[in-house]
Amino acid sequence: MSRFAVVTLVALLILPLLLKADNGISSAELNQPYVLGHVEGVLLMPDGIPAKARLDTGASRSSLHAREIELFDKNGEDRVRFVFDDHDGGEHVFDVPLEDRVTVTQASGQQTRYVVRLGLCVGKHYSETDFTLADRSTLTYPILVGRSFLSRGVLVSSAHDQTVEPDC
Image 1: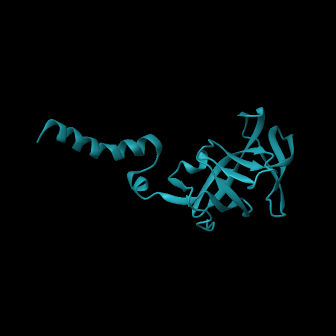
Image 2: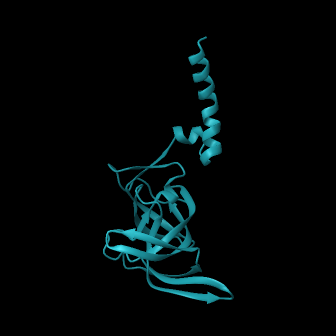
Image 3: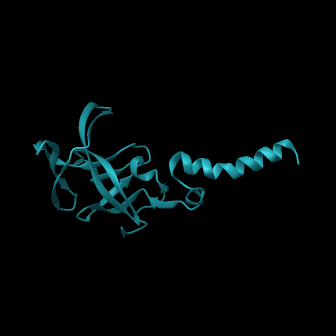
């Protein structure tokens, strides 16, 4: 057996172990990706609030439409109260811990946003996810799902939308 064949064989045997150790995704998961459309129905947890979301592999973080955002202290913990408008007539009040503050750079300039962690269900895929709170009132979808959620074995097809119902 040639030296090249031996190196190739060893690499093929070790690659799945390296992938699992490096990012938590097994080779089986890479071979069986979960494919979703670029727009999907989702459930926002813990209350199971239905909404439409745009899945965007170009966005590093997920974003949530929020208004009446209020930062306050409760027993020494920074919390955020806000209204989530699901763009379908529903208004949902959240009162959750503040996870972080981030500065987002856009064409219109920089903006500091609060970050909160909520559960998100897309198809059968559920994860606790960080969302930046933003005014998405002029955008079509109240939720943007970014790579922070999608990076766990979810592929996005721009040719499809609304391929699954949330079932978590």
